[in-house]
Length: 155
Image (cartoon, rainbow, N blue to C red):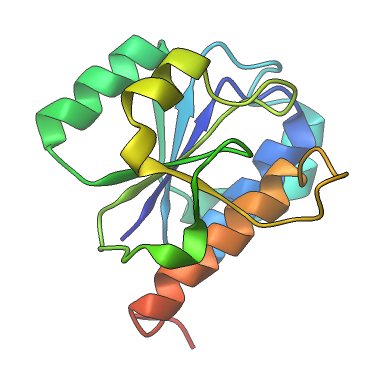
């Protein structure tokens, strides 16, 4: 099972949409605080519809706290950024990998991208576009990872 990580998400409906994606794909959702909303916000709940009971959500108090969790687990990970040096289709995903996405308005911290440059991926797009919607980006990368594994458990 893949694990989707939203670092300091700011927009409630995006997080709700990602939760719905997690329910449909049986992926875990990791939320790194601070969040730009409260989880029981009606916009989050509405976007996630009635799928919330199907989602495994793990919360982390900070990016440092999450990173300690990741290092202790020893799992693979991929950072997604418009500044990535490789396309998300150029890597081999493994079950258990963490797919890490930054806040909607600023992306992942520059120092994190520099430190883990070899793990930093991008979604190709027209050069005049700044970025894609967060929930769209999560869906694109998640389905590529699942496609590489033959969509295990999905019909």
